[in-house]
Image 1 (cartoon, rainbow, N blue to C red):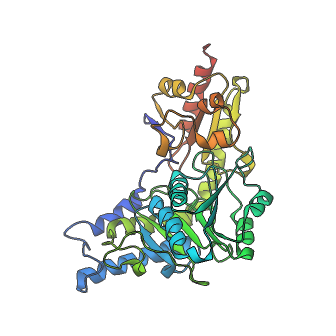
Image 2: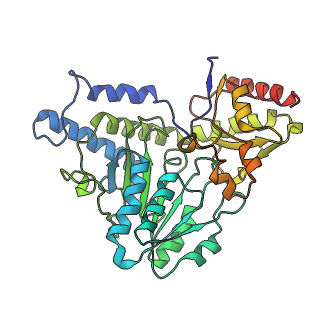
Image 3: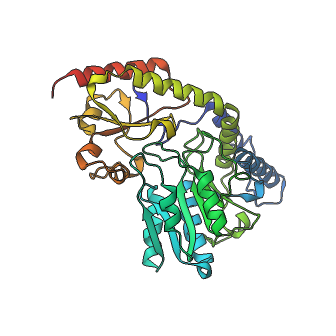
Length: 380
């Protein structure tokens, strides 16, 4: 077993070797390194690779390839969705509904839109992190133009019921955006069955490269967004810029692998989480910060009574885990997500996030649990 052990898969994943192998073909002199906008053979080969990758990404979520717009990642996709809809659909309304536990790239967008005159309702989730559908429905107004809800929360792993949320928004004629950065390739997504209008994706949470993502835009009925970036008119005019062929190919390959191996990985992650929780000494006072029956097994957020998370991290240098979202890792304030669930500042400061993944092993889990049991057995 190699040390240190990586248990921060929710922050980012290592690139699968099968993805790297394919990406290399689009980087070097011996490969297909052309600009996909060029009309010569090199450009045509690059364009074909991008088309193939677009089809792979679309297939994972049951979309059409033409509904996939490449971005630099899920943060840009979220920005494009919220700001793009707000700008283009202003005549329909200026009210947006979201959750207090959303990713900063959604919450910060909403705050920016508020400065421009938009009205935003930030709903408080239930204590387990789930959205109360009755409260959600009551929050919708005649001028509500967009709802933005994360599928799997990056800190606590809770899975929102996007099927039921989509039913409500569809009946009201309101656009529905889903941040699926943590869920794509991990749990099933079917945009043909669930009326999602916009859906943000990224590669580096599912064993692909950093710096590449996509925004799904429904075509029937047609959903469009005002562009954030202007230039050469790539991506149907909604996202200009020369396309990074090697990264796009990597994302396509990562999504194709995820589609093939999703069920097997789900089973493995459930087994890893079960072993972890079963092996922790019950007298240590472990507190789970989300509903295990409604959460993704690869993300486990918990705390030990009377033990500060930073102290635990310093005591376990052999293990890479998180004391919150990687996006807010430098902040001294406790997690806003956990505070929104009703945890006190002290409870939030005790919370740690262990996130398991494709390359996590039983031996690693056993090693970590032994270290945790030793640590928590030591008096403060």
